[in-house]
Image (cartoon, rainbow, N blue to C red; front, top):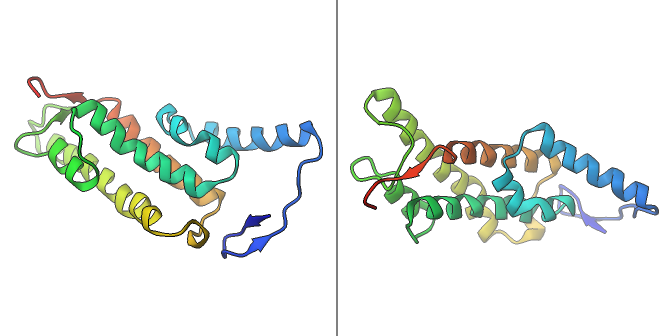
Length: 164
C-alpha cells in the first residue's frame, strides 16, 4: 500500500524480481543524478528517497541545511535564529565573498533568505504536518531537493569568519 498525492491509500504493485527492484532504484538514482543533487543532500535523504518516502526525504534534507550551517559557523542554534546570526550583516559568522560591493552584499543576503525560505516552505510545514496529510509526489520532492542542493552548492563556498 502507498499514500497517493491526494492522501488516499492505494494498492501498488510489488516488485517480483530483483531486476524490477533494480529498475526502480536505478530510475530514482538517475533522477537525482540528472539534477546533479549535491552529495550533502543525498547523505541526508537517499534511503528515504529510494523508498519513495518523499516526506522524510525532503524533511531530512532540509534539516541537513541547518546542520551544515552549524558545522561551518560553530553555532548551535536552529532555523531562523541560526541563519540570522550566521549571516548577520554587521557581525557574520560565515562569509563566502568580500561583501564589498552592493552585488556581493545582495548575494550574501540572498543565501540567508534562501535558507530561511527553505525552512519556511519545507522544514517547518513538515515538522508540523502529519505525514499522512503531507501531499507530495516524486516531481515535487525532486524540485525541493534541487533547491536544497542549490543552497548546499553556495555553502560549499562558505567559511567561518576568523576569530569566531
